[in-house]
Length: 199
Ligand SMILES: N[C@@H](CCC(=O)N[C@@H](CS)C(=O)NCC(=O)O)C(=O)O
Image 1 (cartoon, rainbow, N blue to C red):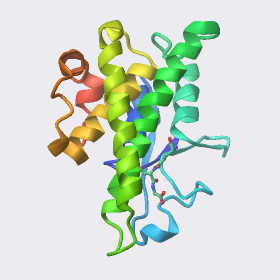
Image 2 (image 1 turned 90 degrees about the vertical axis):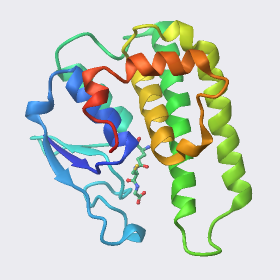
Image 3 (image 1 turned 180 degrees about the vertical axis):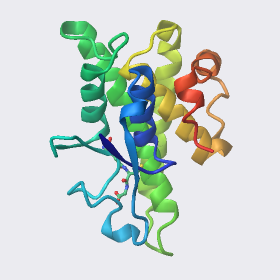
Image 4 (image 1 turned 180 degrees about the horizontal axis):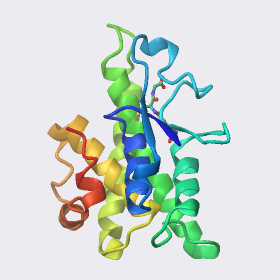
């Protein structure tokens, strides 16, 4: 399997964490993305031009990160990260949707901040920042329930918080969110998160 990769992408990180948790890293070859012209996309294997994508030995190309993670979960070993059905599955996927949406908002703000002079939008940036803060507030309410659970929802929360620290550290999400901060400190020490943390 070939994973088209970018070292700092939080979406690629989610796939790498999943691959480590499912004991599949030895079967994955890393292919670097092409950053020569960001306005042309960085991954020719994906019609959307984005990373990650996973090319299988059958020549199938899987994207986006959620689809890749679910595939890896189904072919790897160890506890499942995606509950099979019913309300339990819906809850975990909703947590994933919130955390991944927060990461999307953070990524869009980051891209906006490096656009040529005058091409950014301060109003939209504020809208995205508000979404990130609302997600963080909701995570603080839920944090006691995360406990030691490892699934695609808590993995996505770990990636969202790691990316927030990496790109928006000055916004100090830990202020007034002690439960989430305590949970994240423990969760981010898991080998799969520690080995993939953005440097
Ligand atoms: N929904 C996608 C998001 C992927 C994404 O936004 N990737 C970014 C890197 S973090 C990317 O490839 N950006 C380059 C571009 O859009 O041209 C997923 O979950 O895989």
